[in-house]
Image (cartoon, rainbow over all chains, first blue to last red; front, side):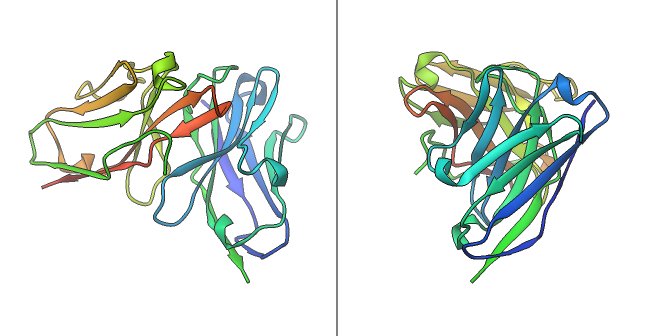
Length: 119
Length: 111
């Protein structure tokens, strides 16, 4: 089964750009559809973006600041978040699912990477 | 304020049964979109517990069960164990928002 491993800077300055990578291993990257989920300290889960059969869906509350894509040659899924603020401090998870549509559950999860935004 | 409403906390004694509700609306659960449940043990990533309203992935004990009716879904846990202490989240799709929605999470305490 697939394994997911997030990597990122750990600390980002406010107003700068956050870039995260999710490395995919253990299975073909083509067998899954990917998503980014985040969790602010002490808070619940918030979806950021997910890939589905005909494109990428981005949370409307983040749409102007988010880019997400799959690089099959590098076997990774990436997230870029522009103009970060302290509200973007969170643990960022990548996740994978089998279903190509909006309905499928998030079956596999990475361990998460903590990103703190400093002022 | 989450689109899907869960109680902030529930508790029960070992061996007892607890239920966690997830209340939505006609644009998500009521529109027959699937409900999924995740268990998040302290300091770990979420884990899929129930998918498609009531299905258990391989390896999830049958002590965990899911159901849905109208605009609400429920997660039931029987034979509570100390290791069940975790946060539980429901998730679905919302047609008005054109995206996923999560419940705010419920912290289960096993007394």
